[in-house]
Length: 510
Picture: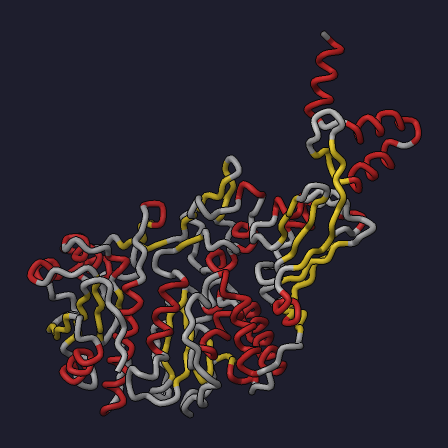
């Protein structure tokens, strides 16, 4: 039987009151994760255990808690974790739903195993990714101990991957709270305004926006473990995505429906809803928040789910394999297949999700245009585009590229990278003439072809130094703008590059 690889020394602590049987869960976990330390602790949910003492006696790097109910004072747990030398945001907490008999034990053990796999992918946090929060309610114990200040993670920017210098402001555009602000051309987060909805995380084409508790690698590790057929005896499995704030149990849900927390159900991109079908899920559901979406993203979510159902129809699959959560008493359907593939939840994996599904279903000749499509298609008007390459220089996803030869410039398009951000339309100096056309579209024939040359433009070279001046199309456009009155100037611009023109001007003035 395969087991997840634990790259860090990991402990799983189980509440003694955990239904249906804490000892049976411990025994099952020990067989699934022989490398982990698995213990049952009394009073874990009540905060009566001192983690500092326990971790000092059992040095670990990753910690998973299996609880019977939510913690009343998470701030106290954070303080204990820090004293124990652990990053509190790396502690995985699972409140396990009640379940009777072997099925309940199997489900609880599988969820804790998945939590341990997720903990291995915790990247660590930076100071700019943390903010203090005051909890909604405090018990008497917390007030007396003054252990009430709670910290939570927020998104941060990886400067090595951010495309702000190219003019990208996708995170600012998608944020419903205006939390991303620009200072000296660089994104800065207003931590007070941010509500951690997660939209910026899944919208950044370079993965430069990171919340250390919600990385694609963590989500993927959890899902891969939950869907691993070698782990557990659950039968056909389905996934339920639900908001991290949701605490109510799903009444009468079949035990084969396994939950995965996300910052908000409304932030889920189509690729995250479809990828689990490749990894062995029979179906995927998204649970709407019982108290209503804090971020008012219900309509976006419905649009995303509708788009996924259109994709499934093109693949000749049942559309309700992806849907909003409804009656979860019946078991999930059997899986359509299972691939051993990682990276499907990263920005680079979006196109692969659609390609792999099409290959699995042998449906390679479909395309779907939709405002909810996560990919785009770019075309250039040969009459309007001058080949200035501003679009390629500004593309944050690297979908438009410039290739320069001895006597030409080529504009190349990679449909697997385009996120339809429309940055190319914004910077194009000839957009008033319709030089660039963009459609939100998943184009399977285009994805199969890969990179294509959109246009090739001859280059004019300087008569003095031989360096490139510009494309001939750009010079034609300048000549047309100057008109007959400035024909001599236009010829001069065609013959010499900017450096040589500057040198000539300086010589004449001298």
